[in-house]
Image 1 (cartoon, helix red, strand yellow):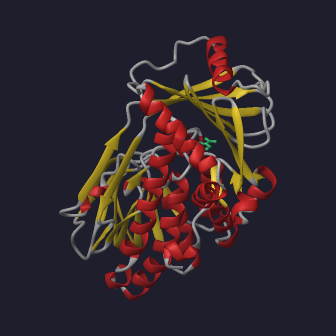
Image 2: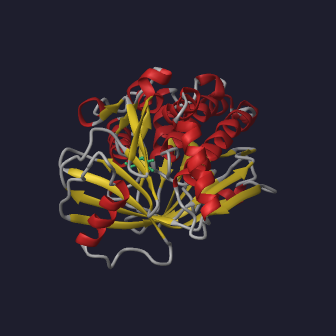
Length: 397
Ligand code: DHB
């Protein structure tokens, strides 16, 4: 058995980028079908980043997704950058009049999936055997096996590739350039049942390596340790992990982490990737499919939602007029922000982590850089502005 569906926009990848685009198209009177090889439960149980710019959470409200972030999220006016145990508070509010929200990617996904269901959206999770069809034609499409085992074909006027860092849609852009870098370290992430240790996030750079103290709820905490990718910490005891976290934040103020049972462990690779162009003919890439950033500074999800903000209104116009020319400036607008975010993520990463072969000169230079940024208002403001979100002019909005 096989079924064929025709729609205006086919969205490959139903994570936050794909579902936000689908929701925004719906709000602008354009139909879409979104597919994903993962089941909804798999995506809901994948723990990803936790920090959203104010601009990104506002999209949840403005696009009629959900206001749940107001009750379940936490607004943070600043963050702490702890260097060798000395705390340096960066006040987003004082420096740039902004705040960020602790509202995990999983919750953003749940809100979007619920909103698409509520609004009658066509989202097919758990599909397999995905084969892209005629990407470079006026009638692009996809063939796949749906969760019930039926062969399906979807044909559309436009395609969005929002299928993440292992994107198959990248191949639909002919002659693209791929920019890529790997880092000689990774993060070992844990989820723990413990009280909050602090009311904001702590980015800790120590001589033992980096640690990030983040949060989820008053009783569940999210933390990361810099580690060697080939020598991860899956076999460490809970005591060993807590001792290492504590050692990386320890300082003369006597700060202590609140500990508890660790119920999840994940290794996160560090990569920077950009594919250009992000758009060709009727195909556009969005989110990790077009660009991946290392996690330091929490740019990934914010960047994906910024892509949606720029792409969806253009795509709605293109779909209504059946005219790919309406997509023309997506690339130009998105790429500027993508490279800014790549630079910020690279900078935060290299400034806060110790390289495995770091010699004493390298370390002292890096500490000099941290002192220069944290010790002056202009440095702190630069960091705050990038972290809390650049002004709309950067997006041509
Ligand atoms: C989280 C992850 C990040 O990479 C970051 O910079 C801040 C927070 C998190 O998972 O909470």
